[in-house]
Image (cartoon, rainbow, N blue to C red):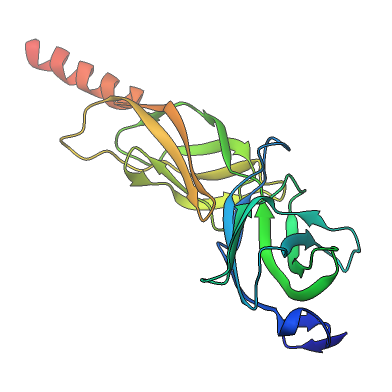
Length: 219
């Protein structure tokens, strides 16, 4: 077995079959072992219909095979679903009909959990902006951005567990009405939505000041 760059392959076997690329390289963990997760395409040279694709990590010998594979010898591709494997970074392995490794792309596939949203505290914020809030959910990271309606949350800080993000609620524009707005978490894994996650309104102190002003003008 010889290592060259990101490849590890046997000197003898399958007429020099090798892997060249994997797309996409970031996929979400599957929720059902039978169905599998995201569809990926593995590209290479010298690929034939007897070959398969497996996944392994941390130099492990246990390989988990690509599900529902479709081989296109003309294009040199193998397409299928990522199996239900734990989150982590995986090697992608090209195997022959006996399961023997022919070539490996090292640490090219990241399997990750999707972001989820559960609540915003407080759920009522000022339409003028500036309300400190905590967004709660799971699997947040430093790249996760948040939107209240169509406005970005400011000063985002995510805790170490990835379950809470603090920030400052953005203001509504003048022509946007008070009421409920969706909250979204967005990163490379996709978008999570919390319908009616936050309610905008006029701050209580502003309401009281307006009432006082109206009473004064009526006297």
